[in-house]
Image (cartoon, helix red, strand yellow):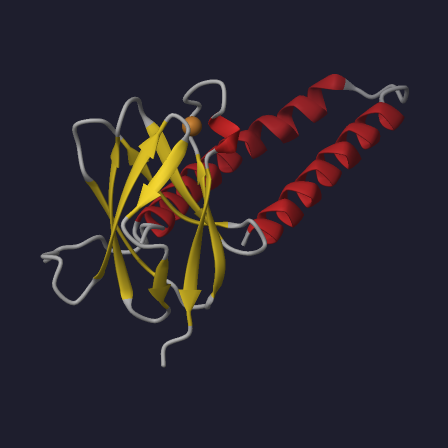
Length: 176
Ligand SMILES: [Cu+2]
């Protein structure tokens, strides 16, 4: 996903650079203004309608599938592997550091002192799930690990001098 977005971004930047290059290399050729004006003013209305239509389609298509897995409509703690996590300046405490792949994990996350951000990363350091760790609240994050491995928990919200040192390990074992 991230490499796809990266590729699309690069392609758009290259396209934009090509347009700039085209405009610069043609700017020295003199042209009659009125015919150009007539042609492009009529194009402008159609272009606006196209963009407005595109906006409606893209907005609805991308808002419908919310990118975060459905969270706990009927969450009770039963049938989940529960992990209580607390963010401190500057470390994490977890009720367990081992869970099983393929079964939903319910992270119950809070902050002991200031706001922290619980970020769960896979072995390639790709963010797989995240939630705020806030003092006075317990936020629930439901996540099912598909792949076993050593995951890492980092802090996603700057919380003071040793914020970068807040690293914990989460072992996800293959289901037996
Ligand atoms: Cu932090």
